Image (cartoon, rainbow, N blue to C red; front, side, top):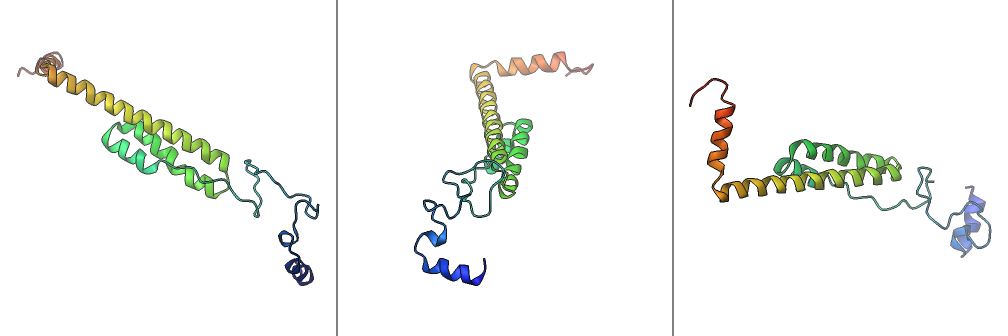
Length: 140
């Protein structure tokens, strides 16, 4: 923008010279464009939650293999967002959330099953049965 246009736009009270109703700037968008072709002057959508710390906690405490998948998706969210790939960042955030919640649910189900086995008193018999059938020739 040259100096003369800059000064005239500074004196103009109509949105800095880009009044959308006056037709001065014909490519002005009133609705946000959520595709990957954002211009520099557009306001990007809010950054989606990446679920990274939740995925790490779910991996450590609940279900290791599924939690790792959640971490992989969560780690990509921020890089996609800052590279202006907003739609892909949102999709990866949803996948990270899904895998993290699946890991948590499986971890809770696993704890419930073990708690029921311990509370019912069937755990020692169950473990002895495993040892007898899978001892591979060793007698305990």
